[in-house]
Structures are given as C-alpha cells and as structure tokens.
Length: 557
Image 1 (tube, rainbow, N blue to C red):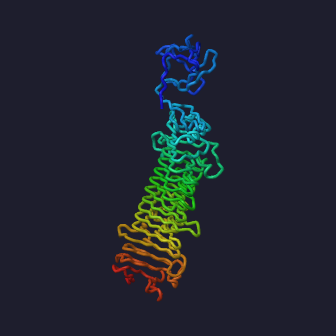
Image 2 (cartoon, rainbow, N blue to C red):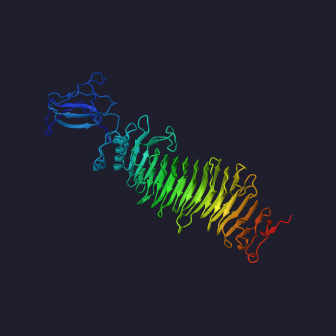
Image 3 (cartoon, rainbow, N blue to C red):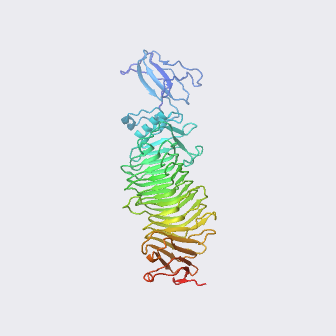
C-alpha cells in the first residue's frame, strides 16, 4: 500500500530531460473521464482552468485540491500529445493499492485502487451495481485473490448476481466484512447479502446451478447471506476432486430451489459452524455419494421451514458429528441416514417437524447406518395433518439416550425397528400431548431385530404416554423362529409384548431380563418362550412380573 505525494510546483520534462513549455495537466474524477476542479489557493475558492497550463519553463503553478475527492491526472505537451496518465494521483487520506502481480498475470485491471486486492469493489462491484457488473467483479476477485471480500458498501449491503462462481484456488476464502449475524433471516439483522437475480442458470446440473462451487482444499465461506431467491438450486456445492479441510461459518442460505448445501464424494474434514438454511425446497444439508465422505462436523446448524423434505440427508458419510443442531417446521425427517453412514448427535432440537429419524440403507448390499443420539427433544404440535406411520424408522443400529419426544399427532408407532436392526433405548421419555390421539407409545419390531431398554427409573421412564395404557408396547411383525429380542434392564414401569401375526408356535419372541426390579410388570399376549422353554411351548396369556432375581412370574391376583 502507498500514498502518492506531489511536489507543489511540478516541472514536466522530455525523455531527454528538457522542460516542456506549455505542457497541460487535465484533472478528472478518479477512474472516469469526468473533469474535476482543482484550485489556485488553499481555501479552494478559485478553480484553475482545466487543463492547467505550464509556463515557458514547463513549470506548473501550485495546485490545490479537495482532500475528499480522488483525482486522475493526464499530462500532455502543448499539442495535447499524451505524456502520461496517473489515476488516483491526489495525495488524499485514502490508501492506494498498486496493481498486484496476480492481477497483471490474469489481465485484471482494477477500477478502484483505494480498495484492497480481493475486494469486489476494487473490480467495479457494488451494492448499487447491476448483477452483470457484480458478476464480472466477483469472478475477477476469485481469479486473482486468495481472500475475496464482500465489504459493506454505502447504505446497502446486498450484492445482486446472476451467475455461479467457482472457488478454485487452494485455501481460497470468501468473506463478508460487515458486522452482523449472517444466520439471521431479516436483512436488517444480517451481514453481507448476495442476492440471486433473474438470469441465473436453471439447467446444467448441480454444480452449474449453485451460487458457489468449492473445488479444492482448505477453502472457506464466512459471514455471508446467500439468498437463492428460489432460483439457484444450492447456495454451496462441493464435489469432485478433493474438497477437504474446509469450513463454512456464519452463513445463511435462503430459499434454495433444492438442498441448501450439497456435497458429494471425496469430501472430508469439513466443518459447518452456525450455518442456517431457511426454506429449502430440498434438504438443508445434503451429502450424496458412495465413498470418501468422512469427518464432517456440524455445530449450531439450523434448518427451518423446509417445504417438502427435511433437515440433514447423510448418505455414505462414514463419520459425522452434530453438536446442538436444530430442525424446525419441516414436513420430512429431521435426519435421514443412508448406506454406511455413522455418526454421533450431541443434542438435537426439533419443533414442528413431522418425523425425527429415518435410517434407510438404499443399496441392497450396503452397510447399515449407525447413530448415537445423546440428548435432545422432539416436539410436534400437530401442524402436520397427515403424519407418517412412524416417528423413528430404524434400519441400522440406533442408540437413543436422554431424548424427550412429545407429539399431538396420531402416529401408528413412534419407533419401528426393521429387520436385522438394533435399537438401544436409554433414559428417554415419550409424551402424548393430546390424549385423543393414538400415539400410545407403541414400537414395532420386524424379523431378526432387537430392542434394549435399560437403566430407567419410575420417575424417568423410557416411554410415557399420558392416559395411554400400557405405557409401552412392543408389537411384533414378521415371522421366523426366535427372530426378535427384547431386553429389559433395571427398568420400572409396565411393558406389553404382543405378537401381531399370532404365530406363537414359531416361538418368535425371545425376552431377556437383567435383574429388573419387582415393580416391573410384563404382559404377554400369546405364548412366551425363553431359551429353556422353547422346546416345550410357552406360557399362557396373562399378567406377568419380573422379580428381583430376574425371574418371570405369573401374577395370580
């Protein structure tokens, strides 16, 4: 950076060092061809003629200028043959940044040298500029700078654009410089806004229809509101090559026409901090691939108002962590996990969302998903008039610990454990907000599935339904011998096991008890067979309880 100092009386010389009598100095507004006054005295009262003409010795009189203005000067000989032109030639308080070697190499000429390299305003962009001008300015900034900045510009903070932009340099960052909360929806409370306008591509695939395409390692986007205006499919897209070690921070993606964030194969070591997706037509965060997606971290991320799907879609993500994330007012599942996905969710808050979790390996030969949920809550106030059959659909290995579920909807079952799947249910509660509805704290098991209920107390039950009887029921579907397992560990409350297929002779129910308290009651509908009784046929229908030694006994009165 530099400041240009001009001597009070300048002498214009030829290349051989001779003065140029009658030389002329034309003064313009910096970056334009509009003439701008300079003055004969420091009070800035009397303007010079423009051009100012040198004397016979080639010497100009003292020239005064307004320090609030930036000037361009063109110096010619007496016949108006140009000798040189200098933009931003005045010695003002503004710092002047010379053209960088990268700008020269890429053939990019700044229009405002007082803006730092990488600032969109340096290349002609502005909140008062048309989308086409901002397209060129932002593309040029991304071409020549490692840090691209969208500064607060004048009274506004919205840059209109109508094309997709490639973040193509190793370690490149796009940063909004204004103060404010970019995760806020209202522009009055948000930081810099990038607004998609008509003319943005509506065909060409996910990459072409994304506002930003991330293509390399250690890239970042920070402090920006990306308003897709229901035109751009995605706010941020990353797929192909090695899109790794990146970070998306304090970003709000508004009204994307598909998923707000879309990532594919070979994405790893990526962090999403305080990222909000508002009113997506698809998922808030979508990860689609078959390999190479791992070590993804979501912290304080939020999806709200999805119009048709839900929050997080995670397919083949072999390692992910969610910390204090939320999904609100969405008709689909808060989390969908596909083949091979494995993760930990430390706190999930869902309010007004129809469904909580779908673990669905879509590839027949695939590895079942695994998820550990530690703490959170799910509340549905009944705003969805056509609720799904189940709140949680487990087709993998699921551990739920310390989660509170409340619903005013009539789910057939809040939990479905599919074939060859396992559910570990520890210290959770289920509450029916409207007793006229039929949640009834039901859970379903399919063939070769397992549910483990453990470490609960009378005050902190796994399953609780106000006015519903029993407090928890396991309803079995499917057939086959010994193909469902229910384990009750140190639990209190009333549990019911029913065989919906009435195939008692197949001995389909295997119940294991780990020294539960005597207050635990077990109601069996159909024959019951444990390992010892399997060959002889079962126990008659009736009320049963588990004594302090873990033995099942019939309650005779």
